[in-house]
Structures are given as C-alpha cells and as structure tokens.
Length: 160
Image (cartoon, rainbow, N blue to C red; front, side):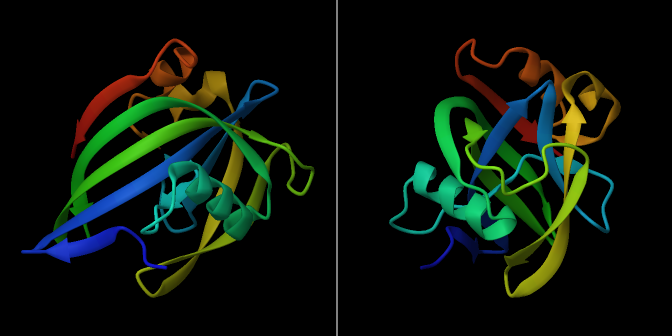
C-alpha cells in the first residue's frame, strides 16, 4: 500500500490520523529523539484504508499495541514546513484505548518509525495531563484540547 503523502508543485500533502490515549491521568505522546516537540501517536493513512484501520496498524507497527478506536475528537488543518517544502496536512484525532499490556503504562519507551524512505527512533512518553501545558506539543493548544475531550468534535487550523 501507499501512504497518502505526496508532493505536487513544490508542496507536500499529508493525510494523517492520531490516537489520543489517556489513562490514569496520563496521555501518551511521541517525539523523535532529535527533536524537542511532542505529538500524538499515529501515522499516514494508506490508500484504501479507513482511519480506524490506520490507527490499529500504526499502533501495532510502532509499539506492538492493540487498541480500540473511539470517537473523533479533533479535526486539524495544518500548514507547516516539511523539510524545504510547505506542507498542507489534514489530521484527524481519535480517542483510543490501549487494550493489551504489551507496552509500559508509565515513563518512557522507544520505538522505530519509517517515513519517506527514512528510518528513525521515536520516544514514547506517558505525560501527566496537567503537565502538558509545560511542553511543546503539536497541536500547540493540546492542553486546552485535552481538557475538552468528550465534549464534541473540535476543528482547528494550525499555521506555522
């Protein structure tokens, strides 16, 4: 299969889904080992794949975890640099529940990622929800958005 991630006329288009896992007052975030910012785990949708199928596949591939997918929480239209190119990304964020014990439920653990022919390591962190305002997290208003989970789908535009 092929990710819905392509270049056209000097631009990058990205269709991504992410999972919001909150348990015991902590949220699961990921970050590349060479970066300072965090994001919600997920990945690019492949052609012919549903959002739910993508989340299930990505969590299995990256951290070996089975999940159940809940409600659509956030819809993001994001505009940011992708290397030297401007990127237009649509990202849909779903509440998820990790349904097995294959991963640590606290602290940090490592996983691998592959995108556009590159392999790199990702750190996964369980962060107390009340500490999210102190971190650089994409989307930038994650602390506020997390406080509103379950209160209807939120739409936002993010421009870097």
